[in-house]
Length: 520
Image 1 (cartoon, helix red, strand yellow):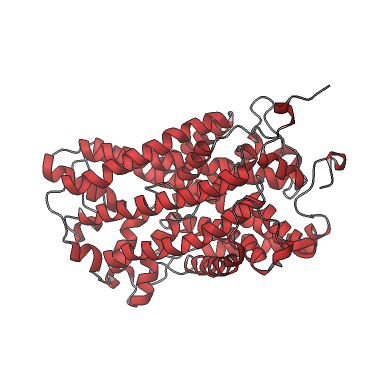
Image 2 (tube, rainbow, N blue to C red):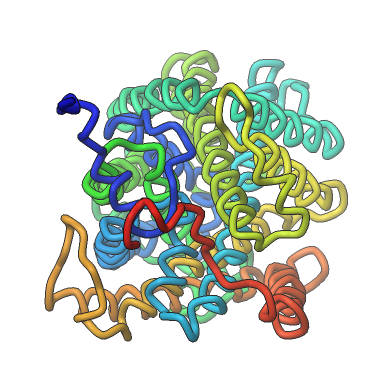
């Protein structure tokens, strides 16, 4: 009996997945646009809002804005490298799966172990970073809505701030416990929210501001604020000023985490990665330019007695623009809700990615109690236990909010070093791999790839190193960047675990498809 043509056809991403030794378990229902929506949300137009004020303070507007251009240029090298690998290995395990296969049988288990734990650390702390950003934005919205800092408005104390932080994480976990289709639709809303909202803020803010800074100030002014930052070295200040750009321009690997749930993932994955880098590069830079043009009084932005309590510099810029022209705060509150929505959608997407990484690592028995975290919801087919594990760890990460003022800097440093550092493992493995051993997918750079992979690897090493530097001087308990200590302790424990035990049983990605299905 003839088999219908439709029954014989298989998705190209699923076919490649089977060749790699995995059977299709997750629902493959994501379109290119839905994958782009989630990836775009992970990067987010307004992600750098909490860092803008500090970055501006280090060396003025010129290093901040031109630094974005430089970081964007090198980010394309990383994006191209990731896209080529993603096209060849369209699996949910993405980075750590790539590391295992590219490093070969001898080094593959160790490479995948390092990559998986770096990525897990980065993504879970990334949830915390977005929860903190969202809580801070809501804190300022409540303050302005209730009368401003000067008018007796309510400024949430640390205990309430922590409660908001935890609430956001719980909401993201609940939403991620439903079918991925629900999350995909929410992220379609997200992409339009951020594109339309981003255009509104970028275009309207300079127009609303009664006075605007001259272009010479915005694009060429350099000024150290050593009295505030304790940094008198110009090169050091420039490096610190560019941290904003480094923090904003990653997260595009979200497309790779969703490849087992995306149609024709060997093609759509690379396209989603590169498209989102392009969109965020343009929108993020334009947003920073709009903020800088709209500054009314530079020194007043940092005054703890101003209307926003000096807590969020972009909020004060927006407030000054609207209050200066219309003598009310309505427009500023609307703009801040737009920015808050960006944090909310970004946190939702990062939670999705974190759960997929934990699920993939559990599937390969790389996490304690793997059998618990690998379980899928019987109806929705989502890794619900992995979702709640990532949420629980992110909540614990935020508890120091009650005692430490530098918690946000530490969280974003941990997130960046872990998340971006995990990119380096498969990229380095691909760099040193013999070309004839690599099976390319539809997206392939050929001989040019070696240069791209080398530049990408060196850039990632540089990015990770600067997030471990002190951000304020003199170094005291209130200014200390505890990210290096936290990362050192975590990575030391992970490496000890490997040396003493895990190396004996962890083999990296575990094939779960029967050999009888074909020679794979």
